[in-house]
Picture 1 (cartoon, rainbow, N blue to C red):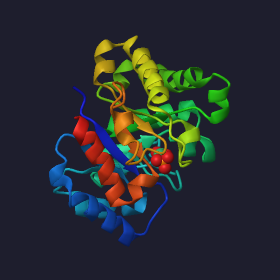
Picture 2 (cartoon, protein in one colour):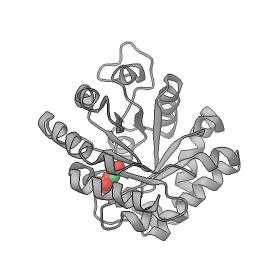
Picture 3 (spheres, rainbow, N blue to C red):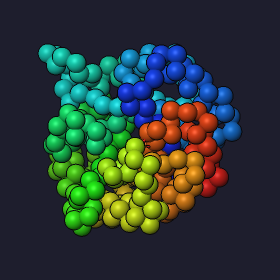
Picture 4 (tube, rainbow, N blue to C red):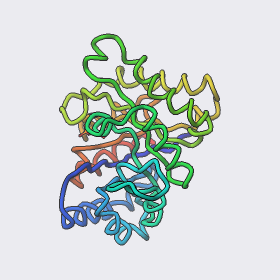
Length: 253
Ligand code: PGA
């Protein structure tokens, strides 16, 4: 059985005070969440705060990006070693907003993944198609291309105990959520593609859904056999909404 994971992606939101309130708000109910793994991916400047507030809790935390380089003259980048230094467990790689706004190619994303993994972080590997690609019948081609770039660079072992997030770009921050059937279809496709390389890795792989997941739709999504939790943007910024999604997962686990 795969343990469900509900992870918040805070993106570039909030202040130090907001971050502390949100962390404390989530933590206040963690005694009721025992079967679902809970994580928050906070902006870089708040990692120290996360480390201070989450040290003795069951909530894991991480960053929203990571450099593909070890160290050196890479102004503005943050290394995997630095994230580990702050106690991070996760780093999101290949989020569509970074692919779009920071021109991250499939190859760059794969390199970031391997760098994070090499240092001991668990990358949350995001894939997903745009509206145009979906309407053009390209969904499977696109997510396969994104996945294959990683498999080519890192081999199937890269995904051992791994985490993928399927995030259709048209559902991110739009309020439009993929239907459970649409999401399940792509999740199953991804798992089969991994299974073609290793059934064992595919079985252990957690595939999260992301894209306007909220308290009202979380349960029907997470109930799908190949959906192992969620990567939550907007609804992760309010402790009560985020917790409601954690509880929805908990009820199914
Ligand atoms: P959303 O974002 O929940 O606000 O749609 C999800 C994400 O981008 O990870």
